[in-house]
Image (cartoon, rainbow over all chains, first blue to last red; front, side, top):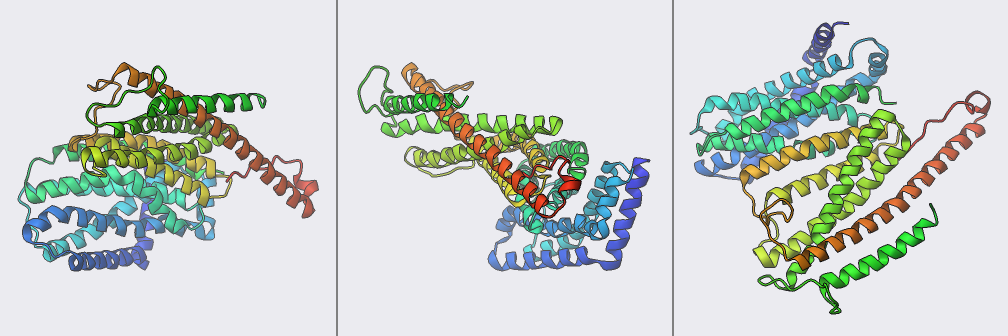
Length: 224
Length: 247
């Protein structure tokens, strides 16, 4: 079967399901709104301080919020043994993985598009460096979170207490990516230096782990 | 093989005792490590810190190789080796992370800094702790596959962590091997003796843990078989090879 046709079909199905229920999106939005509010209570920074810390706050907030969506990725497929049906179907495993990762990517990007203005309002942010670079950082950073997140959600679905297991597996592996996102965002907001190294690092992380996920997803799906 | 175990234990004990004396210079015999000129006796923790680090990295490397072998061959022995190396490696890595700050406080004046080697070691430790947690939380026959995949992801992650922190800055003394650091030949000698002793000790612990792991799996298999017989399913299923159910 054609990889892209299956990917597109699965992606459409997931988006339609999400559009009708809006479970993941609503819980993610409300969760990250809570994070923004609690962070701005906890720290009351001046304009200069908020440029230094906002990168960290934004990405930690998105990281926590994306776990909410990632946990629901595969849980949906366990009902009615859909995952087992996938396993015996001739559809290539990677198309299933790509569809799930792209679905999560769209969800988390939507979340970021809604929450980023709120962060700007609450922290009075104004970028001193080249602000357009925040777009590649956002895209690469989001993909870095969701590609491994989707993969480890498939791993943690096989364990006891799976909702707790996902962050325990995902966060250690995500440390370099989170550091790169936070540093790049901080550099652009505060305007000291160039963010090029961190963008290249993020790109490397994305390439390495996308390859690894595509290479090993079949093994995970068929593990028995 | 089993007769070798007590012999190796005795050799390891003697080596550890000799290496301890050489490192701490308790009895003045030829070849003991001299006192470092600027740091004084605090530096002697180096003979435990560095060999523990090397041993931990060696064990993690064996874990990675065993994981890859398991994914290719699906040999349960490779999986047992991987578990054992991860567990013992985490213990040695913990020793590194504890002895490091004890040394750093009097010498650098701080307990911890986000330096390349410190951070990489910490992240490696975190990854392997999550590896052990995964094994603990998953009790199906798929556990070995999931764990082996996680080990590969961890190995891919470590170089990225290294580069990301390396770009920041570094405070750790230059590594003795491949770096600009110079070490008194007597210190070198003591360091290598300690490493040899630690490797023997690690091997010994891994060996007994491996035997324990294999015994445990046999017991679990026997239990599974027994419950099948008890359920009266023996005629249908006893001839089928049982799924091994590792932890």
